[in-house]
Length: 434
Image (cartoon, rainbow, N blue to C red; front, side):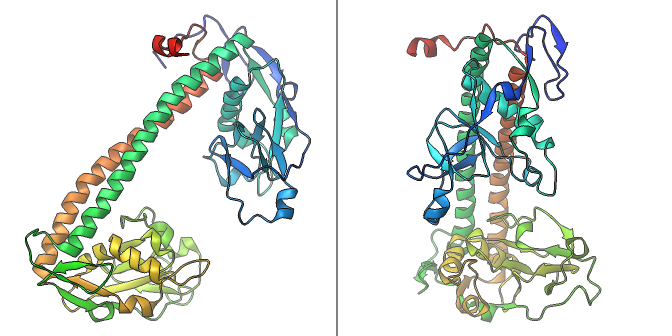
């Protein structure tokens, strides 16, 4: 924030989440600025909800008419607060100034504001209140608050002209940051697609672009190198049978791997816990080092990993698989991560609320692979290329994290008066365009 000047004089606000504020700002209770709107039904409107600080339309195809009729309206220019289960989600932004007319669940709080206050400024004030203080309010297992909890809180308010300046400044500066974040997120999407393409091409076409090809006879595979073998899954890999019960056998300190521990589409383990810490006594599979662990549920997520050691147990939602008969575990691992395999698994998964692929269907799929020496070369090249992509992904994700941190800090500094933006003006070209 060093590029911005400070106010000349400050005072202690007496409000924890605001700290020291400009001496000219005045204390006021939220209840004198925000007023709870009487719940008003309006079933003609589309359904909506809060999503990270914005009111959005939500899919209401499965919303029963009687449920929607019980919803309350929130109109453009009104504020929406999600007061439910604060302790279950500490990251989402739970307040918004609506720019659309919708109906929302009666669990939400709808607020109107005093005309003496700039709505755009109040939007940023509520966001800072949410991030810094609101999640500390409420009580109970589900930590839910009501209007009174908000109404009793204080904040220190600048003059109306200062409010407009702060709002305009934050609208402009956060829009620039949001544009940067959107571009970086698009880059991440492209890099992930590139990563998948690298893996999929290598395990179906090999490394030699001039190799003679032949039709695999498998729709998802297409053509494969003519010298590669084509085997049914159950002829080149075995899926372990028989579950162990950690409540009976001494596997409490073994590493537990479940679908939520694996990053989708990459095979990376993002979290590890022991069977004892997880606390479940349902059946598990014992895995050995190097075996492939594949999630049979929601195959579109491509949750695959390598067992890190001989002291690993996977959940009953996973298949422990060992490659055999000339297929290596690593080549199998990359094959299960490929787009073609995921497409097959999605098509063949049971048509139920939680899609899953059963052993019988998995056993029938055909896998194409070369001799071991070529598999090792292919896997080495996949690792080399994906490591470059992963490094770019890491740097891009870090830049997004930094941008979010800067955005949060900028909002906090402006709303609490740590920076003085009273003389701020939009760039000349933008001012002229306006």
